[in-house]
Each structure stands twice: as structure tokens, then as C-alpha cells.
Length: 183
Length: 201
Image 1 (tube, chains in turn green, purple):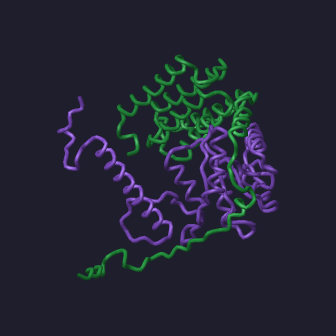
Image 2: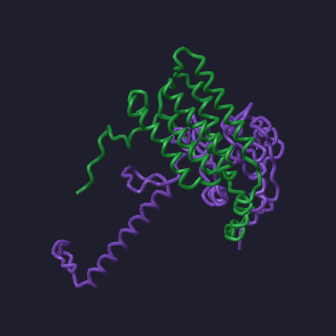
Image 3: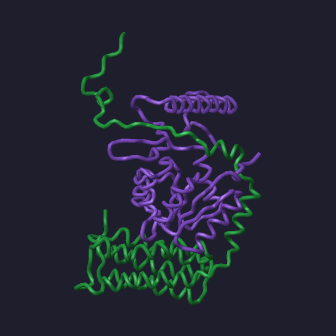
């Protein structure tokens, strides 16, 4: 029995509205590097270079913390310390991202873990208000203490306690103000 | 046999000097022949136009020009010597909306900081071994944003790679079925035996 012809409104039979052109550029890079990948020995050597870097992260970390604080002060200058302005929220979010990105690269993994949670918090709230400012300042104070105390690595049990206290504060905020978080 | 990176030139665009130095050290440890650098997107584009490197590795947040704007310039500026240049964007952001934003600007790969030597190597290896096709449409020019093939896709197959994926999936299903038959046979079971009928003790 012959197949039934597709209905005229079958989307797979319709002409597409926008035409996309697919281009396959020549892979010169493959020609240059050849085959085989890199050996574990090379990768371990490169990883050792990363792990043994002696860069002092504290001045950089302090710079990002100052930048974050300036963002907080800009919001505090507004009536009721409230804003939905994305540029003002970004002024707090971006330094937090820098702390997350760079802390772990320079042995301060706990800074990365804490800043990561601050980013998650800032990415889900619709607006910044007084309570949110209080939470952001708690993150700021904690990261500052880690830098001053030169707590490298994940901070062990104390580090886990600090992270839990901060994440609990975020959860309490989001439970208190479910309307202030994005879907 | 291993990769020979000695003829490869990579441009690293990063405003954070210690981070820039770390990236350069990593790439030199991989054996990259020439590592170029720039401190922001604007300077990065100038170096890119002058040197035409094989790969660009750029930070996202920089002033006056960030990594996203640099990517757009490389993909669309008439002065760009290679609009198809592979671009790896480094950032601390890992949230989906940020990844989508980077992807839509024409970035080839996304490298989340902090990263390990293997993380960086994997992105470079992806570019070499699984280069993305480029797509030009009304509102987008850049690497094809789909890399994985949806094997559950039920629509018409348009490309050779789709047919290969379909064949691979059928082969895997056939092999799994044969393996199941083999296990049944070894256990003295029949196809009609139900799991609940089997005494595991």
C-alpha cells in the first residue's frame, strides 16, 4: 500500500521563512597540530604550573571587594535602598563574578565557592532591597575575613560552616520574599 | 604521536595581569609556539588584525571593550582577517543565560574560571577535533550553536551526520538487544519470563 502523502500544512513540507547558510571553514589548525593530543605528562606539568603559582591574590581580591562595595553604596544612595536597575545590580554582580573567577585560580577556593553563591543569589532576585543589601554585605565581610586571614583552599570545616551560614541567609530571604525572585 | 603546537599562534586577551601570565604559562607548557597578548578587547582586535592568530582566548569583562564586543568585531568587522577564528571566552559566569549570551555573540567555546590545565586543553582540543560549522542567517553569524545531535529527533534527516547518528543509534540498540539475549540464554531464561517470576535467592 503506498504511503499517504503528507498533509499540506505539515511543517516539514513548508518552505522555511528564514534561510540559513551553513559554512564549513577549512580546519587549518588540525593541519598544523597533527594527531594524538597532549600526553598526561605535559598536562600534569601545566597543572603543576597552575598550582604552584605564587601570585598574591589579596590585593586583587581587595580591589574587587572595593568595587563591590561601591556598587552597594550606589544602591544605598537610592530611596529605601531599592532598585531594579540592571546596571546597578551589575555593579555588584560583576565584582562578585571576578572574585569567583580569580579566587580559585590563586589558591582561594573558598572565595570562589562563596562568591559563586553570591552570584547565584544576585542572578535570581528581581530587585535589590535593604534585606538583600544586608545579605550582600555579609558575603562581603566574610570574603574580606578570608583574605585577611589568608584562608587558602576550601577552609575545611570552618569554611563549610561559613558557606552554610551564607546560603541559609539567602534561602531565608527567598522564602520570605518569593515574589522578589525570578521564575 | 602528540599534537605539535609549535606552529600555532594564540592571542590571549585579559586585563588581569596575573591571570594573563598564568594563561601564557599554560599555553607555553602545552608547547604553543607563539603566545600574543592584549589587555582589553580594543587592543586585542588591533593585535588580531595585525597578527591573525590561530585561536583567540579572551576574558569577558574588560574595559573599554569586553570579550563579547571583541567577538562581534572579529566576526563582523570588515578589517577582520579571519571571521571564522575560533574564540574561547573565559569567564566566572556559569549561569545558563550568560552562556547563551556568549554563544549568541559568536563565541566558539566557553571556559569557566577557575579552570584547570585540562579544562583549557579540552577547549582547544574541541576546536581542533570537532570544529563547528558556521551559520549565516538574517540575525546571526557565528559557529553553529548546536554541537550535540538529538538522537530522539523524529523530523526529517537533512545532513549526512544525522544519518550517521541514526545508524549509530540503531547499531547500539541492536548490540544491546543481542547482549540481552545472550544474558537471558546464560541465565536459562526465556523472553516471556517476567522479572517478578525470577527467584533471586
